Image (tube, rainbow, N blue to C red):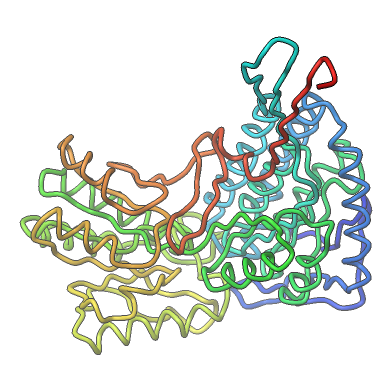
Length: 478
């Protein structure tokens, strides 16, 4: 079934083609499957005008009516799950089963934030007779959302959901490599009756779009998910115009495996989760610090499960891991493996490309990796796991905190005191024990240190999209 859509921009409630475009490549076959339109400066200026007009309407729309439109759009996406999932697998490569789950996850973001739209409460501050102090939460304005390629549908959904639930209009710049997921979202909202200009979708040269839009006075918030280096650059640009930012940046997630855990279950669940989405997840468990008393059995079980991972075209039945999403990842992953080996690491399985067609990289395990290997400091963003022994929990925590990132972390233990210690001392915005699930729509998600700031999801998820206004009202002129 070929369901890949004809790609267009969505500006002011209308679909638009452009004169220039980018090829969209299926990473499993290296075949071109579509053309992604490239927005011109004139297109971007039209988008700003449309978003301003849309915001004037949407901010005055009752929260219940906003929520109803969001829920109608989500219901349409659930109905179209198979069509959307097929598009995601074609452009990204992930197994179809994972693409289907991504569609549902994106819908859950809309559904959760639709409920939160009804709960943007202010407060009345106690005061003297004849005086009222009231705190209002109001939408910040036009949002520029910048989403990455690794989750073509759920990453755009997170930003759109927060903006729309808060009463903001949004200009979404989605990834040119994986554009269909965002287009399906825009189509669902169009069909659900969203007023024109509230949601706008553009593609193009990333630097050109950010350079042009971030400096515009209409843009009041930049919400970005991507690398730390790019996040720093965008934050600097935004600061010149005093524009607020929401930054969900890179990670290098540690996993601390204590000596009291069920070794087999911990190793198997870790190996399965590590290679989901081909490891192209900012919360992917990557650096495993395993107590030395259980290191060998954990490593053995993990390596065997990694080697048994079924790699192939995501459209094929039974495939557990597809290709990496683009050809840029292949040499980057190879360089990290070769650097680790040169510095004394043990390559336990994988380590290179599979086949000659498609961007398939073997599930890889490196053990006993020295601290000076690049993979210990740089997020691989691919199917590479590092497994090292540690002598104590203190040693594991020190290793976990040794990188500048702090997005997600994990621990396996049955001891309350160890869990309490990790909760208190591991530097991460999200830490999970005996599970490798880092975030849900109902929980706040974001990082510390160089992994960014601000939160998406949970009751805190709309905070960045709102501004606080205090109103002081005296009954008499004083």
